[in-house]
Image (cartoon, rainbow, N blue to C red; front, top):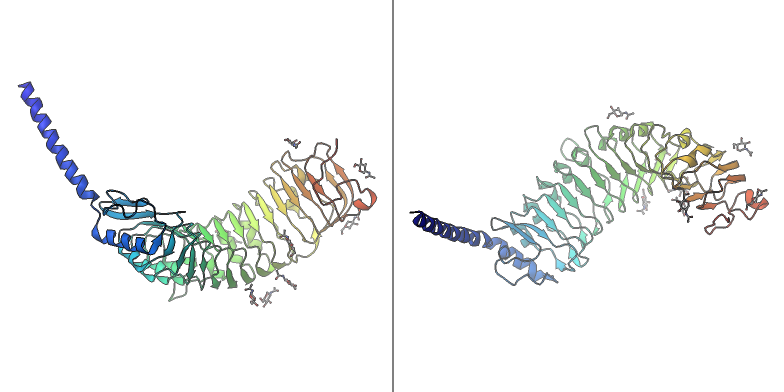
Length: 416
Ligand SMILES: *[C@@H]1O[C@H](CO)[C@@H](O)[C@H](O)[C@H]1NC(C)=O
Ligand SMILES: *[C@@H]1O[C@H](CO)[C@@H](O)[C@H](O)[C@H]1NC(C)=O
Ligand SMILES: *[C@@H]1O[C@H](CO)[C@@H](O)[C@H](O)[C@H]1NC(C)=O
Ligand SMILES: *[C@@H]1O[C@H](CO)[C@@H](O)[C@H](O)[C@H]1NC(C)=O
Ligand SMILES: *[C@@H]1O[C@H](CO)[C@@H](O)[C@H](O)[C@H]1NC(C)=O
Ligand SMILES: *[C@@H]1O[C@H](CO)[C@@H](O)[C@H](O)[C@H]1NC(C)=O
Ligand SMILES: *[C@@H]1O[C@H](CO)[C@@H](O)[C@H](O)[C@H]1NC(C)=O
Ligand SMILES: *[C@@H]1O[C@H](CO)[C@@H](O)[C@H](O)[C@H]1NC(C)=O
């Protein structure tokens, strides 16, 4: 009996395997609509992976970079393949597509089809580092599940569509390094805007041609932004007071614009900030008070037109600093010696100010590498003999009395 039973079991197993195999083959037979769409893309592209077109079943006998589920194409992962060509309308036939990554294919050119708005399941769209041109279609704003949108380092032009403000699940918005122009869209009664993106953590808009003022209504306390990166544009007007409402901010880069007016005092509300770049603007008024912003690692306030002042109090209190850059900051008086003792400090660049008296670099951070006081009014220096980094004092009175001390532009080591 036991033998019979075993036989039965084997038969069952065999049948089961047959069934399973049939199912597997069934699953791997790629949906015809998806096959057609992929073939159409292939016809317009050069340098597709060698496996492309080798079978009629891109899911079953897989084509490289094609990811399937239940016979449908759900992802295309084709970063850095050297693909040449354009993105055809047929892309929109991949109606189950959730993720499209075509990044770093330099020769992928042309415009983005408005049909991209038909890919309703899309969560991830990564087209960074390609050669795309033209305006981005406002239909991108109609993808309800989109959470990752990276279009950086292309040649896109035109305005940022207000419709992007409808992407309520967006986590990452990277439009950096393009030729976008116009203002940042904010919502009005009838139109969406970037202020509605309360789940977005990254606004990367640097290196474009964006202009106009930053509307006060861009910021609100529901936002969860951690990176606000706007440097290298043509923004003007003042930095809105409302920036202080976005307390989640960790990186704030507003450098290389035409911001003017005073830095709002609300900036000191941003106590999670690691990185603050306000350099190369036309900011006026007092140098901002960063007291209490005890997570700052990187601060650059260079090349503004602040009211001349002594070193602010925070030069002696922000122990987290790694890099402090204030070139042409109108600073004068004696440099607080406590600054050099911050445990992680690596770089202090305070060139083109009017610091005077004795520069005392005695209690030094073990990490300290670069101290640049070029073009100040320093008359003498007391330097810890263990300091082995760079010190630049060219353009200070101390160099006319003792030209042996760090008075040349090239890196100087203290001789033993
Ligand atoms: C910046 O905007 C001003 C007008 O506000 C314009 O005159 C200037 O040409 C713009 N600069 C760039 C680089 O676009
Ligand atoms: C600081 O942030 C809190 C929380 O978002 C907010 O209630 C307060 O108004 C902000 N203060 C300033 C000066 O922006
Ligand atoms: C800032 O610049 C704008 C022009 O872009 C000007 O109208 C405004 O008066 C300036 N504000 C200050 C405080 O300088
Ligand atoms: C700031 O304004 C001055 C004139 O007040 C101008 O010479 C300078 O070019 C401006 N800087 C920037 C970055 O726009
Ligand atoms: C300050 O401006 C000068 C002249 O435009 C520029 O060469 C320098 O790189 C700027 N410094 C910083 C730290 O941005
Ligand atoms: C240094 O500068 C400050 C402020 O500009 C001035 O009051 C002081 O007399 C100067 N000290 C020396 C030693 O030149
Ligand atoms: C410079 O000094 C630091 C800390 O004292 C040490 O870790 C580092 O090895 C030194 N570098 C050189 C090139 O002597
Ligand atoms: C000149 O520099 C040397 C170190 O190179 C130092 O020993 C000496 O004390 C300095 N002299 C004056 C007057 O600062």
